[in-house]
Every structure is written in structure tokens, then in C-alpha cells.
Length: 94
Image (tube, rainbow, N blue to C red; front, side):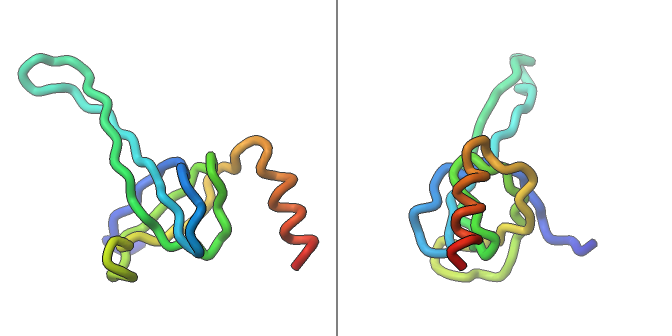
């Protein structure tokens, strides 16, 4: 295992060629008010695995691929419901 950062998030857009937008959510307790704060951030990631909207993926930090792309999809952790038939159809065509 190397020292590159790894994050897990949900694909919210797959409209670009070999690029997906991944939303990574995190929660933390505010240091002063002790309230749990929920926040999220969007990352563009290079996708060779063919992830679709709703899939839960693990992304890993990499060298800059383009101006805004510095992450690569490492694995698809869980497919979204309803995407199984789309994936099977694409594999049948290939």
C-alpha cells in the first residue's frame, strides 16, 4: 500500500468521456459548538472502469491528468441499483 490518499464517494455525473464526478461526504463535530456538521466535496476522477451515476467508488490521488483532474477511480465498491442491466448490455455489445 502506498501513501496516496484514498477517498470513497458516489458518482453524481458520468457525462464526460473517461471522467466521472464523485461526491465525497464527511461528517465532523464542530470544535466549539459540538454539533455534528455534514459537508461534501466534488472531485473529477479519471474512469477506466466504466462507473455510472449512483455507483459507490474508491478514488485514489494521482499525478495531474488535466487542469481539474487529479484523481483516478481505483475500484467500484458497489453498483447502483438498476445499473446492472446497462452494464450487461454494454458488455454484450463489446
